[in-house]
Each structure stands twice: as structure tokens, then as C-alpha cells.
Amino acid sequence: MPKISVRGFEMPASPIRKLAPLANAAKQRGIHVYHLNIGQPDLPTPRAALNAIRNIDRTILEYSPSQGYLSYRKKLVDYYAKYNIDVTPDDIIVTSGGSEAVLFAFLSCLNPGDEIIVPEPAYANYMAFAISAGAVIRTVTTTIEEGFSLPKVEKFEELINERTRAILICNPNNPTGYLYTRREMNQIRDLVKKYDLYLFSDEVYREFIYTGSPYISACHLEGIEQNVVLIDSVSKRYSECGIRIGALITKNEEVRKAVMKFCQARLSPPLIGQIAAEASLDESDEYSREVYDEYVERRKCLIDGLNRIPGVYSPIPMGAFYTVAKLPVEDAEDFCAWCLRDFNYEGETVMMAPAAGFYTTPGLGRNEVRLAYVLKKEDLTRALFVLRKALEAYPGRKES
Image 1 (cartoon, rainbow, N blue to C red):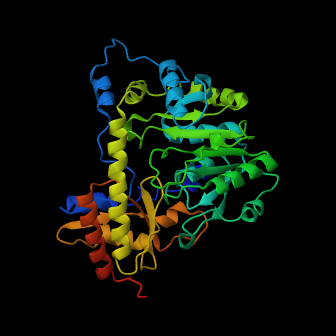
Image 2: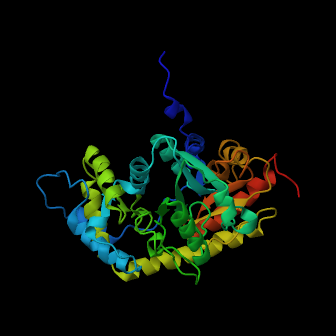
């Protein structure tokens, strides 16, 4: 039998989805599963987007331009201006989700063997995209005890060598909910400038910041405009995960030319998705306010509830809609699987993402989970109660 590729062998399983078979089996046994494992919002998609899809008046669903529709890119310019991000339509390339934007950034800017420095824990698919591009991820570790703040600049410089080509950040962060401070962003800027690196900045959660601290985009950093590649997506902003519309934004013309070759090879971003995304930009400010206020309440519900469970600790996330929590267990992946396979309380259980899958360094995050507060408060409250019962019943619980 022929062997699969080394790339296919090394590609990691998603820590978010790899327990899905156990969840499906639990549901088949009639157990209700509270999904805290995945960032799929339950809030409604903007009505303007749904109406635009319903009212499509076309006789042909054609290819769109490889860069995306100009009308959409023009409206995105106005959207970014609200965040003091100054771009032109030509700076924007529409992609099939933020994931394709990350992949095309890697393929366009990195050679096989080039290294990217990434703070961990990090969005697990970054590793998958790096493997696809033949690049290598090197990590600087942030810790739950320090609220996942960035380590000192020396920790970054210890990793920099002749193969280092980029730094990648997610701000606000998935999976931790951390928001980088101005000092930390300036620290990254200085490193990028000193070593002439790319800065890939995933900023898909900019709408969801729950602190008085300012949102500092990579595009706000002076002196590295040609180094910055911004990653964006409408998936979480408008509860439109399924339309697969993202964006890659850069002032670097050479990078854009390279990215466009990959865009042409995949032909075009989704037509229907662009129609919905463009219409979403016309949604009233009230939609965004209601969504934001709901996440503020959900965050308080989840974090307060987690920290009331004996042995559980979660720092307060300042952005996005995730948190990483430490549990009183030796092996969180075993606990998460046990919750789905062997446990239920009154016909209910919880599904979480083991946090070890968000770390590259072996052994880190073994007693941590990532939780998404994308369920209504009543469901979050009940899920927390079921989680408490699961920890009380779990045979592998670690007593403090």
C-alpha cells in the first residue's frame, strides 16, 4: 500500500474537532451536549446579509474576480477607517475565510524551512498552515499564571536566527482572550524592524474587546508598514462562519502580487459569501452593540462560574470570546473524552477543547481547556453546573 506524505503524517488533528466522534456518539445515546469547544456563535447573522441572499437576482452564479469584488473592497475601506486603519481597495484581497488568508500569507512570504515565531498557546490551525507551507513554528510560551501576557523581548531574541522570517500574533487572542498592550505591540514592532521580519497579525476579533485598553492594530505601528500582513474574517463578527469570507491586507505590493497568484490558482472567493458580507456592512450599529453587550454578559457568566468551581482557575479574558481554564486534573484531554464517553448528569454533558492542542511545546497545557462562551447565559450556567458535577465524579481528579 502506498504511504501518505510526510506532510499528511505531520498535519495535526484539530483539538477543537477531534473529539467530535465521541460527541456524536453521546448524542446518539440521547445525551444533550453543551458545546463549549468551538467558536461557533449562536447569535443571529445580520438580517441585511440574509435578505441579500434571499433576494439574489442573478441568472448566473459566476466566478468573482480573484481579488474579490471591488464594491465589497471599497466598503471595507470605510469599515477599517472606523478603527483608524488606513487602507485602499487595492490593499485588500478577499479570501475564502481567514484561514486561506493565513495560508496564502505563509505561501507567499515564507520558503520551506523558514521559521515563524508565535506566542503559545495559539490557534491550532496555524501549525497546520505552516506544515502546508513547509515552514516551522517556533514558540515563545505565555502562561496562565501571568494572564498570558507576552514574555520579555529577550525570549523572542533567543529564537531569532538566519531562518527566522516572521512573527505571528492573534490580537485579541484565540484561544486565551488576551489583548496585547501598547507596550507589547511596540515591543513586537521593534523586533520586526530590527530583524526585518514579516508581522502576520490575525485581528478577526477586534469587535470584541471588553476593557478600557485600546485596540492596537499591527496597521497602527509606525515604521513597519511594508512588513505587516493583516488577517481578517467576517466569521465571528457577523456570525457568518459558513460563508467563508476573509481578507488579507497589506501595503506591500510585492506580497500582494505573490498572493494574487495563489488567488488566481484557486480562481475566486465565494460569490454568495461576498454578497452576504458586503450587505452586512450596511447593518445598523445597533446590531453590533447588541452582540457586544451579549458577549460581555456571557463572559461574566462563564468566568465567574468557572472560578467558583473548586480547583478551577481562569484569568479574565479581555477580548474575543474564549478563555483558557486550568482544571484539577492531570490530563485534560482524557477528562474531555471521559465527559463525552462515560459521563452524563441528568442526560447532559459538556464538550471542551483540550488546551494542549494549542501549544507546540510538548507537555504544556495538559491540565487546561479552552472554552468558548458562544452559548446563551442560561445554557452557560447549566453547562458550568454539569462541568462541576463531572469534575466531582471524574476518577482522575487531582486533589489539591
